[in-house]
Length: 574
Image (tube, rainbow, N blue to C red; front, side, top):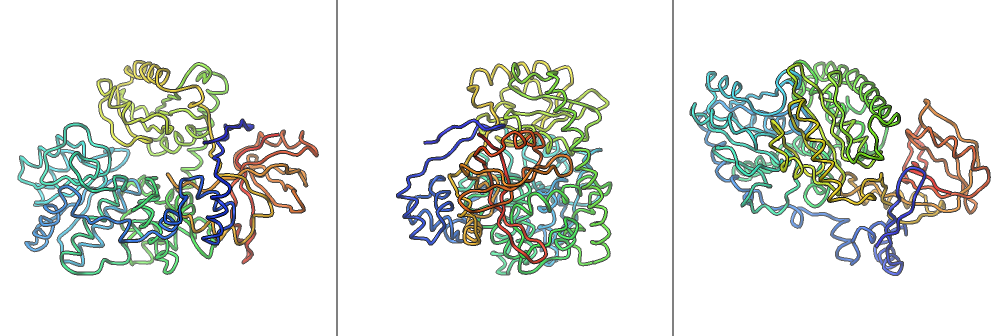
């Protein structure tokens, strides 16, 4: 059950938890009441369920890699290639998932004596996925085994070409497959039909990790420590659900990173001005991973892998400086595109009173940035969002992000007659189509959404785990919240509402877009900041001494060796 309340911007969905069960959880596990309320509202009610969530384990949460369809033959083929000194080519992708997957293969197989090389396509010139030209070039240069990571599940023509040329192809991927699979020596994708692996939500790097861990188990060796860092980075960055096995490995990787910083992580942390005693999954997702995503825009894609695994300090520092500049440029371009599209919504060129979906295209928008902008628009407006980079030949290459109520992959599958290609998941996908098909495509999406969704489904929403008092926000609550990490997809950062607060200090506008103020309730004063909500300045200026309700995250602010408990505001209501 949940209660729905309208805030200034969002529809608040407040989860109702049984107070007696909450008290029992808080008492049995020594947790602060708001954290116990969060667990209960998310379905962890019994002591066994709570304990299982708070303390994930290898035995309970991680299945054996042999359950992955195709894994046994793939591992045997890789070990044979190493033994016979065959040339192996790893074909990756330019995003964090693809780069970390490629890096794991190198870190794992080079110490075993493998003759291994890697290829990452150039985002602008080649686009996503294995191509026949790369297969032909690999065959010409004597490679007898190609392994794809984080791609390949729809590479029909390249797979056929590999077979014709006598090159064995192993596909490792995690994207949802189409009805027909490519012809390959082995395909490892937990989402393929007939795969008995119980957990289907692995990132591409997760699938790579399973194959590598299987290899090391067979040869009775310990995995290199660096692999856990790479697995954590790729999993968080690809925004796969942080549940079950993914949650276990991200926790494990974060513990490794926080106990011993690698050269590349130290540079990324410095670039972000992160001065914390402990990095969280949110730090990785919002501060670290976007920098690695910038690696995909380097002219030489190989630099991305070199940065992550090189022991040469000068190389890592040099690439790190480039990343910092590129990431700042990326943020500027992203902000400019967002504001441009938001302008079309404000002046009703995109009329959200009549339209169910946000679709926009431009030749000026870099394809490497539009996915990030689409995600932000989807969150802020509550609509499935499609943004396209228009190429010179009249094709549109797009990224889409969707709301939980609308399976975008299924929608693309139903309209594949209009598309040149597509791939992805329920919430995020990529697609390519001819410019002249965009109007038919939009019309079909509008019709499908009108038939399947309610108007409320298309409102921007925030989910609140329960109620909190300012007096609850202390060091104990912060410690307990950390037990729920890592936060991300399907295990979001807990959100609370606080009733009857009053403004204690005049609000300030920071950098023309963030609003900061302090609120008071029952003898306690707390600072609160609302990021990217400049319109709230007028709300606070008009509220005077009236009590109001805030929706917020409770966060730790570390500065000059001081730790303060503060609020990150989400929305307000009178």
